[in-house]
Amino acid sequence: MNQLILPYQKNVKKTFENFISDDQLNIQIIEYIKIIYSNNNSQLFLWGAKASGKSHIMYAACNYYSNLEKKCAYISLKDYMLFNNDILGGLEDYDLICLDDIDFIFGNTEWEYFIFVLINKILDNSKKVLYTSSSVVNLEKILLKDLHSRLLWGLVFKINASNDLIKEKILKSTIIENEYNISLDVCSYLLKNKNRSLSLLLELIH
Image 1 (tube, one colour):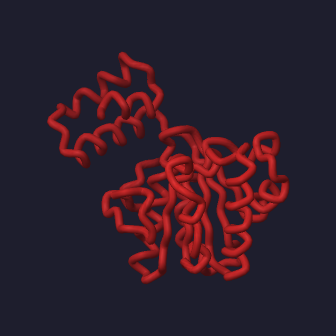
Image 2 (cartoon, one colour):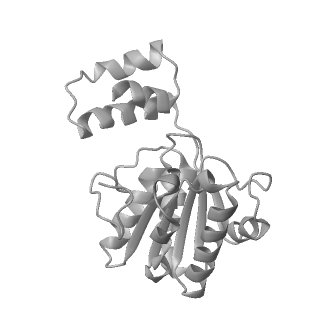
């Protein structure tokens, strides 16, 4: 799937059902997203380390609500330099807007303003917006203080890192999902003999 294409195009490989975690808080986050239309919160800010599953949850949210006939939009702000800000036009008309890696635009005055305006339009239209970031909302990194304030209007949750058992399951799932011709035994080997950072382990698998 091309991450920059809007509206959201279904990615069947990323669902809540195949999000691998045994952390109760992570599971509660997913359950909260599933009921976001039945409570008063219009936005949710998720943060966690690289490869903690943030993008998986965003794709899964789009899949989940697309199945409920909601109009969903996904955009990865990690790639914001590759396109013009007009890609944000009309997003406020979608039921669910997922802004992945929002921290990549922190410190860019122009893009901070564009995102601030978009969020206001989303909230004015009574739509829902999810954000992910590799760090908690950091006042020092955000130049536009109104944006910092707006991001804190909703609930802020941290996605907890995986333990080695969960990491091994994720690595095996990655091999199977991508149909790699690799023995699943390599996952245990990597965890014992390599840096145990999940993002680095996934790079090795790929």
